[in-house]
Image 1 (spheres, one colour):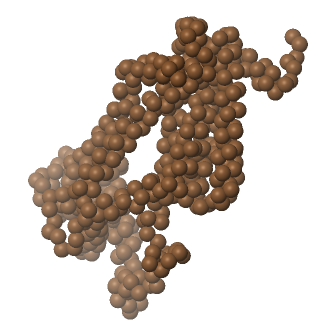
Image 2: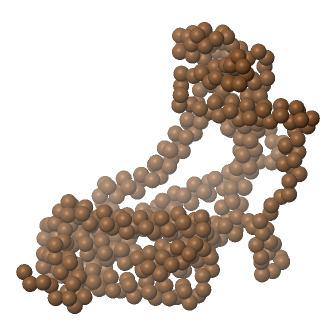
Length: 458
C-alpha cells in the first residue's frame, strides 16, 4: 500500500502543481459567471429602439402595443414566480428591468419609404421619450391592406417583427369573431372553459397524494445528471492518462519506477491519482454550484422548494448506491483502457490516431443519455445497458424506472467481470508497451496472443 500511495502522491502533486490544472478548475465557474454577467448586461443594457407605424388609422399600432403589454405581463408573472413574490407586490427595480420596454412607438415623421429612409439610415433622427434617436424600424400598411411591410436597417434584431406578426394574427382572429357575431374574447372564454388535463400517478397510500409533482420527475433528472457527470469524468481522464503515460514512456521514467514498485502498484497509484485530480475538479465545480444554489435559495424561498426534491433524489440510496458502483467500475474500466493505449504511443501524433475511435465509443453513451432524458424506459436503454462498456452510464439511467432487482445485480456482476478482464488485459499491454517498448503496430499481435491465436509467420 505504501508504494501505491507514493505513486499516487507523485502523480497527483505533479498534476495539481501545473498551471493547466488550476486554469481548468477555474474555467467552468469563471465562464458561468462571465456568461451570466454578459446575459444580464445584454438584457439590461439593450437600447430602446424607436419604431413607427404608417396606416390610415391606429388599429395596427394599438394591436402591436397590446401585444407588448401582454409580453410584459407574462415577464412580470415569471419574475414573481422565480423570486417567490406573491400577487399584488409592487414592481421594484428588478422587476422593472425584467419587463422594460425595448421598442417604443413614435409618430411617423413621413408617410412613404423614400421619405423614411434617411431616418432608418440614421441620417435624420426622431424625437421620443428617450430623446432624439434614429428610427429603428417602420411598419407600412400596403394600399390594399393585405401586407404590413417591415422596414429596418438592422436585420438581426427580430423581436419587433415577431411581435407585429403575433399582433396581426390576434387582430385577424378578433375581426373574424366580430364578423361572425361573436365576442372578441370568445376564444379566450372557450380556452378557459376547456377541460383541464391533470397528471396523476398511482401511489401506495392515499396520504401520498396522486398528482404528479416535481418530486416524481426529480429522480430521472438526477439520474441523467449523474450519468453525464460520469461521462464528463471519463472524458476528462483521457488527457491526463494518455499524455502522462506518453511523457513517461518517452523519458524512460518507467524503467526507474519499476525498479522500486511492482507494475500493479504502479497502475493502481496512477489510476488513483488521476481519479483524485478529476474528483477534485468535479467536487470544486459541485461546491460552486451548491453555494450558488444556497445563495439563490436564501434569496427566494420558492427556489428552495424547487431544489428540495432534487436533493432528496440525489441522496436516495436506491439511486446513489448503484450510481457509486457504476462510477467506480466505469472509471477503472475506461482508465485502464486509456492507460494501456497510452503506453503504446511514443508521440502525441500516435495517440491522436487512437483518440478518434475512443471518442466515437464515448459518444454512444452520450446519445443514450439524450434518449433516456426523454424516455427513461426506452427498450434501447434496456438492451444497451447489457453492453459492458455502456453499463456504467446506462445502469444509472435505468434506476428511476425501477428495473427488476435481478437485472441490476446481473448488470453489476457483468460490469465487474468485464472490468476485471479489461484491467488484466491492460496490465499485459502496459507491460509490453512501458517495459518492452511495444508500439501500436504490436497491439493486434498482443490481442491475438491473448486470444490463443498464433500470429502469421513473416
